[in-house]
Image 1: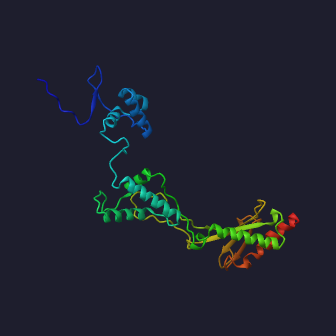
Image 2: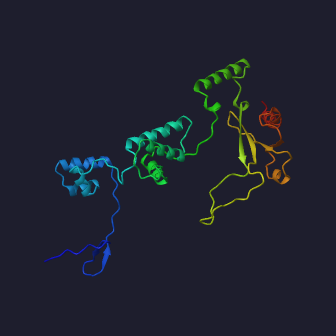
Image 3: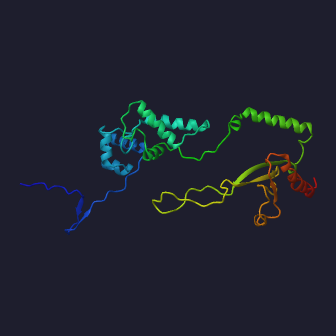
Length: 299
């Protein structure tokens, strides 16, 4: 009587003409979409064999058997089942997008907390610890919904956020009426300037560093004032000419000569103790930059 030997836990395959055996390696997982699957099933209905359809559409033959005989749904996501239904995850993704568009974006912790409250309120049995999903679920959720991605948000005050298209159009109408009243609508672009300020942190915050693995605390020694910054005012003409920037040092004493010596002489630099929007800060700008430029161009 022939007896079947027990299969070894590690699959092996004997090499012809040799007693040496080697482990069987699985091939690379095939990638196919729903349209390929539907086309393959349609071909099977027209008399094409499973082997031919598997080769032509690059779909495993076993998968075609299961789909053809209704053992598994035609559209079935790979991997284990998700704790939330597809409809619930789609609603969450739409909710995230809506919050971001209205100026109240959702953070990672906020999302995980909301999912925890939802499954708890629904009395849903899930595999989450304390009903709160972890980083693994979070990453998988982003992969399942590529329309949602991590971004760095920018702060926007309620005053600026409340500006509408009507407000912008009314502003341009008022400016047009003012320029028309002053007979300034026909002036050239070299005489129209726009300016804006920006702050540069002298001690930028970069928390991504390399250190010994397992270290509890990693410190970075900085200057005494970790919030120190300087303000730079950029001025540009309507014709594209960019004026030398105005550097404003917010300090009680004059900056060190070593600091000033590294700044090109053609750049304007002033020390001030008052607010940037004070008109006294812009008087040197008008005298040294705008007037000198106007004289050079002979307006």
